[in-house]
Length: 104
Image (cartoon, rainbow, N blue to C red; front, top):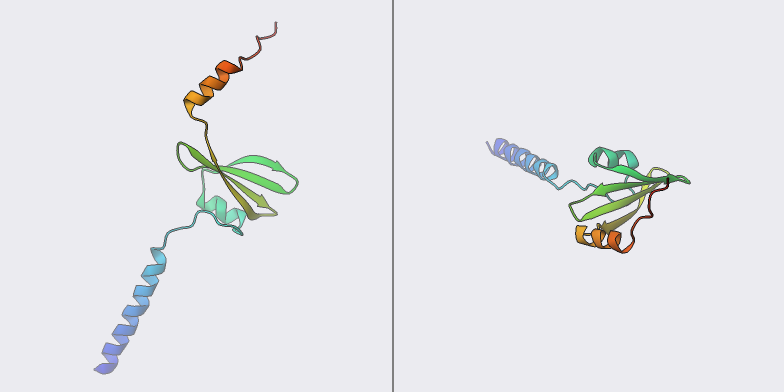
């Protein structure tokens, strides 16, 4: 009888520990991550720059921020968070620097 109770407790403990690993938050990016794993977890990533064995992906995190994620030889080496210019600031910049008149 004690053997059955002990076996049940061990099995319960193993199932509980397995459930804890399933419900851990997924890390969408971390230094040293492979490019293929990053792309599987971040389907909205788009290539921003290419060249010299480097790829830089852009990932929009929300309406105001985005990440530039740099891979060298297929390994994530740099994360850089940037802020988008607010719409009013973009409009002011356009007003201060009017475009050249179209050529004819």
